[in-house]
Length: 393
Image 1 (cartoon, one colour):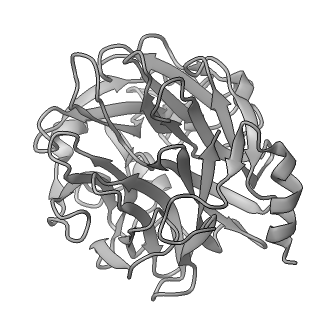
Image 2 (image 1 turned 180 degrees about the horizontal axis):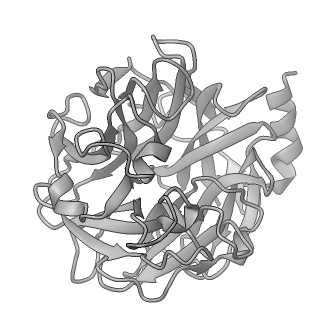
């Protein structure tokens, strides 16, 4: 028996009210997990930053960054994709959606337009010759710095339009770093803004004039959102967390629309002085403003400083889910938490594995079944990207 198999058996008792789907409705009965990306294969040194959506036709799309030269966040990086027609059990060939060509393209944030069924993908870009630290210090030219691009697929993710630059629409002057997602974006399906596409994102701001700060300090991180009311053709900047106080430093974010129409936003706290590594807030107006400032979500204190994902499961009385590592001091032990009160509190309900793990993304793949696309490995968290099917009981 492999270590992973032993881990699955050991966690079986933790699965209420969740069960690992052993015979979900798919073309591959008995499928619980698959591995769409293995680092070192397919011409890439490392695969990172998973993002996933299910299309209107039921195809599961698994996006990732294909990093050519190593596991680092800069350099020659492509956005790649694999498609699954059986709920994430098997995967078609890998395709390149956005080629870095020596530069860095990443932070995939896909969403399905509810009006047309088209897949809309936002990504971020910078020169492969510069680092995040240099960008935050303002030591790069505008052409080298962070920019935002959108692409569109009208054929179920088989082909995408070339990346189109929308930086001028959504990045104010004075911002330095900028990153979409990563992880799936949100299509609003109820309320006055039904049809709106909302992309959680993050940025860093320049220090105020006269400050001795460089801009590299974590206090200058902030979360924000961008949104489109025309299927991704034009974009506007939504809410902006611009506290920059060093107490709660909102960063990589994920969002979900709750059954009452509000937007729930969960953010990584990037080394703020507040006690806790997860922040959250709400929006009542379709991501245009926040209902309250970001605050620590104390029931997720087991999560380390890392990206996480939220998903509102569809169906009457269905829960809000959160995924992330579950060791406060290490990227290890991918788990799922459940909220039955709209994100006011969460309870951990299943640990998928005791292995090293990092970024993840949640997706609904069928009635009563969700998928978790996550980074994991034995010696390190970036050995493979795995897809696990979990039944929502």
